[in-house]
Length: 254
Image (cartoon, rainbow, N blue to C red; front, side, top):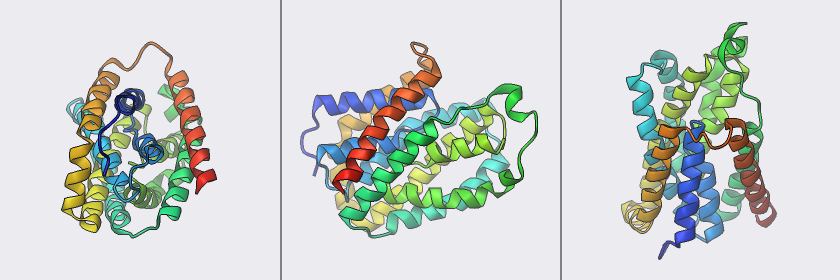
C-alpha cells in the first residue's frame, strides 16, 4: 500500500492538477509517473491516477455542460467507442515490466502531443473539418484502452488529434476532451476495481486521500483562474519537459 503520503508528493499532485486543469486536461499521465517514482505497487497505481483524474475533470465537465459548449452528439459518439475499451483496458492483466514500458512510452507521447501547436479561433475552422475527422470515434477506441490499462484519461492524446483534423473549434475540443477523460477514467477505474478487488481499491484510495484532496484544490484553481501567471503555451512546454524527463526515466528502468 501507499503508507504515509509525503507532503512533497501531495504538493506535486496539486501543482500537476493546477497546470493540467488550466489547459483542459486531468493530469493522469503525470500522476501515474509520480506514483511510479514514489514506489507505489504498479497494480494499485492506475486506481489512484484514474481517481485523481475524475476529481480534476468532473468540475470542468459540469461547467462546460452548463455553458452549452459540449457538442453532445459528436462527443458522446466518440466516448461510446472509447469507454468500453477503457473498461477492457482496466480488466487486462499486465506484468510490471510491460506496465512500466507502456507508461513510459505514453508519457513520452504525452510530451510530444503537448508540444503540438494549438490552432484557435477562425484559423481553426476556416477550412472545415478534414476527412479524417469523421473517423475520430474509431481512433478514440485505442486511446480508451490505454486509459484503462495504465491509468490515464486519454484526452491528452485525443485533443491534439481533434485540433489537427479541425474536428470542431478550440472550446468545443476542450469540452469534449474533458468529457472524454471523465468517462474513460470512470470506466477504466471500474475495470481496475473488478480486476484487483474492492479491498485493494479501498486501501489504495484511503491511503491516497491527501492526494485526492490536493488535486481537487489544484484542479479548481486551474480551471477557475486559468493560470494567468504564464502564457498557456509556456505551461504546456514546461509540463511537456517534465513529463518527457519522467517518461524517459521509466523507459530506461523498464
